[in-house]
Length: 262
Image 1 (cartoon, rainbow, N blue to C red):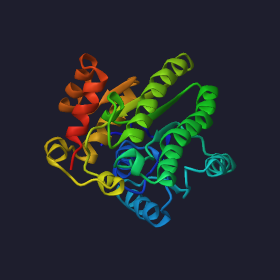
Image 2: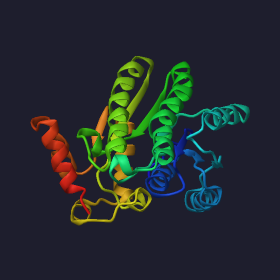
Image 3: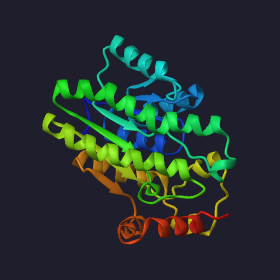
Image 4: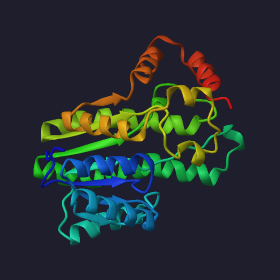
């Protein structure tokens, strides 16, 4: 177990399940103090107890609905009031909505876009300022391999992750002269509750390419600490993402629709 992040404080969003839990565990292993954020207070409290017991980690639990601007601003105000500076921000909160776009519930899509796009961008803005002022900091944005190709039946979700990838790479370019980096990690199919939440059944493609949440989290944290601009996790996913450069986008959409078919 390394202690390379001892004395640093990391904030992880979406920390009540899946990748968020494993990002928190990985950071705790490396000695970071943690601020855990998600809507489900009980799940956050359980994770905080585990991390304290396993790693002796100092943990703050701050339940919040990050799809709401006022909640994001209150989060920052509460941290400032407690004298907590965030050295590492893991923008992990997000979810997908599966189905034909015209048939999906708008309220659900709107909520997804507020979390995946607006919330992520707002938190990046809120915390980047302090990082620049202090001359150090790391931001990890969680995108998806869906960012590389239009994805029928995940049309809005894939588009939201394309935004995250483009935004993250551009932000990294702006922040680097100030001693701050922004890394965007693009996982493929991962063993989390993503499919359950999105409403899609697991198919042959999911079973063939699925990676563990812990391995994705470790790869993402490693890339963030290296200061990498972006990373596609897993060699199959990397080859697939790279191949989209040579494929017409309309054909890519057809291939993705076939891969996502239940």
